[in-house]
Length: 70
Image (cartoon, rainbow, N blue to C red; front, top):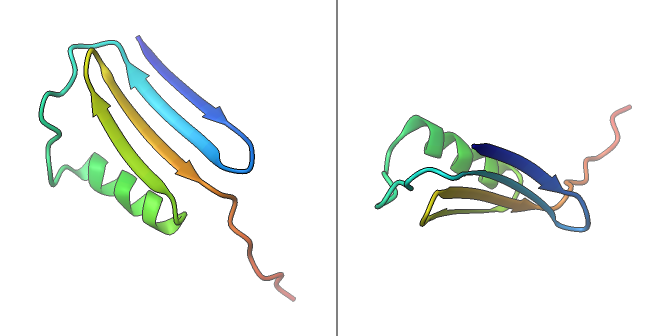
């Protein structure tokens, strides 16, 4: 089963998790993980992977403030 959730608030928390066997050691250099790290950087957020009895990918970030365009 795959579950995707986002908890809104002052700090938003996006979570994608499954109930599989887990990844064991988190692989380096994969396209998917590179994209997630790039997204975390763009959002000034924090990215975390937990792989134990399934895998949880977590991204925490604040809403970014943008200058209004004229």
